[in-house]
Image (cartoon, rainbow, N blue to C red; front, side, top):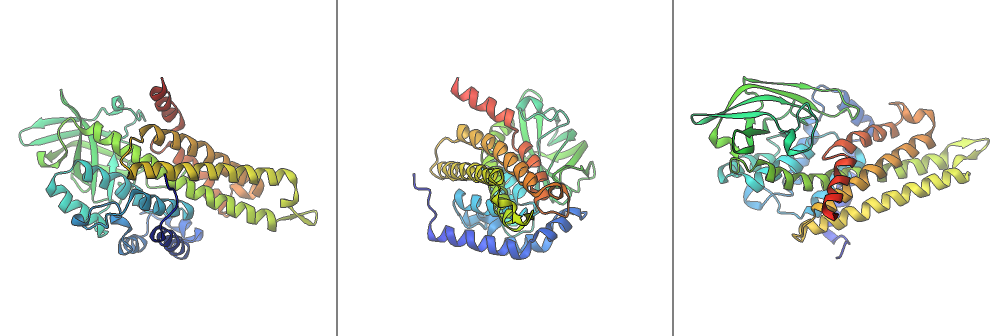
Length: 371
């Protein structure tokens, strides 16, 4: 397996890094996080102009038909700069569900709108029980004529407060979990932001007898969980890329701080304990980085990657947490304050740990595959 980047991919990585460094400095990240919308519409439009929003989509739907590795390169750079945007919820999650299970009409309408930056989407999968499993989906979708009536509560629907459409997972009696397209401005749903440690756009979505058309079903009735499982495996790799990007930034920033910060007249980087911390941080980052692109290449090659996706996410959960904890320790007390940029990564590491499956879920998946 060749894990080296092509010249085009190197150009993509360098241009993405340059663009996000210029347009999304950490001071701007804090401003966006504190805003009501939680994202920058101008930055989102620029991402669309760069072709990022359609990078994983076929050309007939406005995309560039790029590889999964290309998508991961972009997601890694977003994680490195902590760029607050609905890229993950819209591009990594929802567009993949529509591409994999949507009707031709749904693909033509929605994927083109996503690629052009005209549509933001949110996945409403999780419920108050906070279960990652199929059994955790309790919301009911009751057939009624040519409609389904959806009732229930969804939690941690990312970017639901700014989206145009949601994909809601609900259970049709005797048929199983099914995915439904729901307009965000539907009169029978309410959306409110939830305060989180990551200061991201996590939302509660309440559906109170919300009627949707049968044409709003994604895929076949009862096929929702199969679609979610496949998408969630890819999304775990995408979230891991975000964590790898953040890990890289932490190692770089902390190394620079250790060379600059002086105590007793000498840089603290001269202390062996600090050197060991930094060396272990780099080893943890390199481990995550190498495995990330190994799994991404497996996706492009059409190989079964479910086990590797869980192994990768569990690895990144632990390594990103370790790296950010050591980064804060090296910075000292200031490392926990909002004025210090390293604190942004410390919070984000905890939020990312629970996105797309926590460590325990993925360790269970690994055990199930091995035993």
